[in-house]
Length: 383
Image 1 (cartoon, helix red, strand yellow):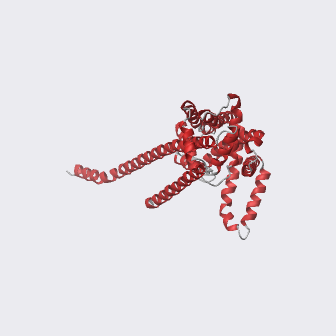
Image 2: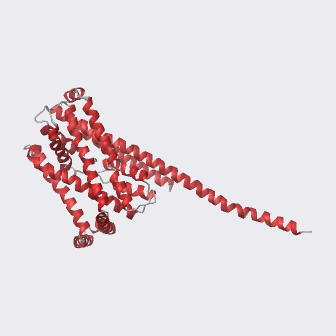
Image 3: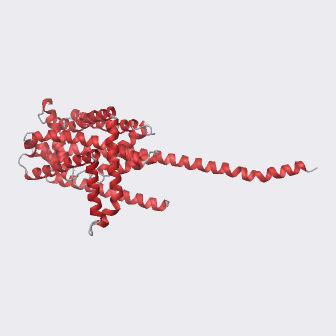
């Protein structure tokens, strides 16, 4: 069993390493289209004051991000401490960042909550509540960014196609989640479609094994939404907190622009926040880890439009700094929390094994002493 676990862990490590190589390769590929020497020349002239402010905003975003998970866990009455919930929430960035479609965060968090003695059904509901709030907020920012659609796309055909596909898929996912969560009829309709697909000749083999999990997921989604409606105070608090958290994240771009000596005023802050949201939303459907490749291209183009026709090297430099902060630095921070969490679980497992061994020894001891006591009683009774 231990050997099997080690093999699985090595496979996961190899897969994560492969995804890491892909992200670095795609970043290098995008940069290769620009003048590397000019890009680093622009970076060398950056105003460090604004770089530090941008890093400060990222750290503030990182610190605030898991708080909605903590608030919802308390509202649902889960028997888990604030500190452990916070650390589990912080691991999301690492697992989302290294998996296609950012799908790795929730499965690991369910595993981590289970290790912390929280039932999977409860943790799934909690994470779904958190995800629904996240989707509402990010789609709200994305909807605001559409007011500047013409400026961000700027006649670029590739940007136009990416934006239409990305925004359509993002809004459809939110609409799907809300409709499933709020309507039993729509949920029933989707379940009938799934059952129908499971009976089809060619795709039935793929769909049928997943039917129970999908039905359970729909049930958890409805339960999560009902819980949100019953805990309106917690839901509103989380919604407001997430608006602030994502606002800080999107505002990092403004200070990167200032650091690269692009003349943007504080009056343009909201426009730039919308620009960041636009770039992220349009490539969220890409299957690469962290939307690598697409996000660099999208952000470079949006950066150029925000910068008002600044040099191409400035757009590439801004994209590189933003990507290093928002993705790679965030991944490193999240990885640190993950390593700490795994070390904590290992210590808890070790303590549990030692306690179990001590209990077994304690139970065996009386059975060994029993014959001696019997012998003594026999000796004492013998005249």
